[in-house]
Length: 172
Image 1 (cartoon, rainbow, N blue to C red):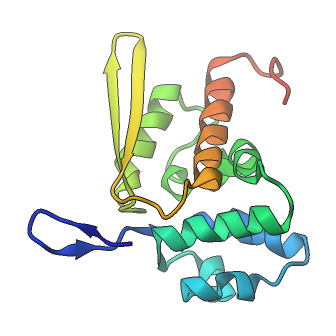
Image 2 (cartoon, rainbow, N blue to C red):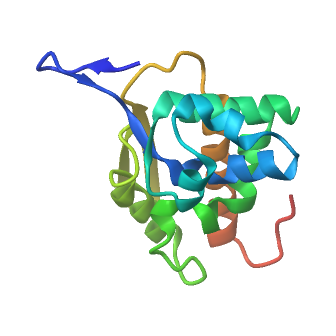
């Protein structure tokens, strides 16, 4: 649903379709009809695989929810965020996570987010040893985007443990 701006223009929040790739991959592995799942987005499987097109943010939320529902995996977003986000998030492709600090990761996430999405505004504040990462959606989703929020939480959880704790000290 487009949001009203200060100039009486409507802005449709968008996200790069590359963000849908992990969910479409799960759908295909589970034998679901990915083209049917993608039909409401107006994108084809080939376009999502290429990852260059934009999709409406609400369609992205709906796609993630549909894959989670059809695979009967209510925690799918968290699982994918925890397992894949460090390697798969398009805005982190420029970052070498094997040598990155948590500050590098969070800074890159926030700086590069604007090139991938207009669905939220991100802010990172650092004061001494404390960093505060926040985001605010630029629109009101038609329902709580549980899978998107789960994906982000899984990503934050694995990022923190990967970048701050000694290797092999955390198991999921």
